[in-house]
Length: 187
Image: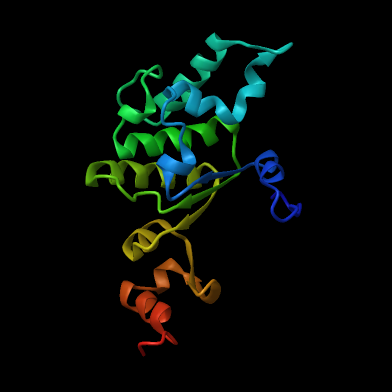
């Protein structure tokens, strides 16, 4: 990140360097389901709101609210439990967490899984905006049209290895699927 290597396997070093993750299993791995939107957004940035061992909850809430408002979270109430939100709004909470932290690199693993069509369109626009704002977005998706519609460059992996790299504009869904299936046992 920024030309500096990261130690392999160090989550804390990755977060300090500006890498954020929106995991595929957001309910189990990305959210504190029993907590409020505020707590979920601020959890990776608590040091910003602490002084002398005390948490400034008003500053925490204001910063979380700014982040969620920027993403058009509905409802516009950061005190609600995150478990009461739709899948698309839960995903926005995960993204707001990393935006509050000021991430330079955002890893999105199946970002629209479990999200309705309307929320997908909002998430696509948000992902494009983040990239336009200079955030490096790494998108992992089994939805080939999603990848081709959002990515500048596509890496096709098979069994954990990169088998093809190309600009997205040079690929179509059939070519990507052919690349994925080449060499599979059924062929």
